[in-house]
Each structure stands twice: as structure tokens, then as C-alpha cells.
Length: 169
Image (cartoon, rainbow, N blue to C red; front, side, top):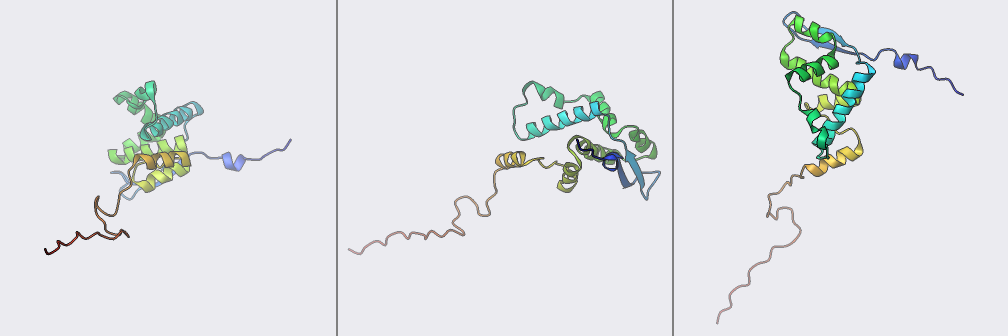
């Protein structure tokens, strides 16, 4: 039996974000967001999986109701994702839009992992599909845009046919 020392790897699973601007800290402040407990993490992962399947056009059937949250459920989800740091952000006067973006980033980070969250940040808000099958599925849903308008022959190697000249009788 082999023993593995993962103490360093498992040490700190929180997320620290620098430079969050607020009315109290106009030059920015560093906030630390604790990782949710296992039950909450599993719930976030299930919700993220469901959202990805819905986005890719998969069948989510009766589970669709889980994607539509009322105001109280949205607040509870935000609290689950951001923990006690949400109170700190609010007390410091962080704008609502920043809190929403932080929540979206942290949700993806805790539900799907650091790489997926980085993809969200780079994509401007839409998480990239997590695996190759999902990426291929996403490509099928988005029709390819052609560089030439429909019916155009620009770039075509097929020659144009000239209409036959009328013969002189």
C-alpha cells in the first residue's frame, strides 16, 4: 500500500481576490471566499451540470424547475457561494454588479473548478463547456458564419457560365 502526502495540495481551498473596489476601499481590497462544505459543493456542481446541459440543448425534463430560482432562493444560493464574505462586501459598499460577477465567478470555480472559472472570466461571462463532448455539442448549436453572403461566388473556383450569344440569322 502506498501513502500519499497531499497536505500541501489540500491545505487551503479558499479563493482570494485582490483589488475589489468599493465605496469604503476605492483603491481596492483583498477578500477571501471560503470553499463551501461538501453538501453545498455537490449541490452547486449538480446545478452547474444541469445549466450546461440546458445550454447545450440537452434534455433536462423535470429538473428544469431547479434552474428557475425565486428571489429568496437566489439570495440563498449567493450566500452558499460567497459565505460570510458577502456581508463584508455589502458592508464595504461593493457595487451590486461587482457582487453579481464575483458570485458568478465563484459559483463556477466551486462547482466546476478553477480552469472553468478562468474560462468564464476570459469569455466575458459565459462559461466554456468543460469537456470535448460539450464543446463539440456547443459548436453544433451555433451555426458557422460564412465570410461570403449566401449565393455569392466570391472565392469560388467554379467558373461563371456566360449566356450563349444569340445567333444572327
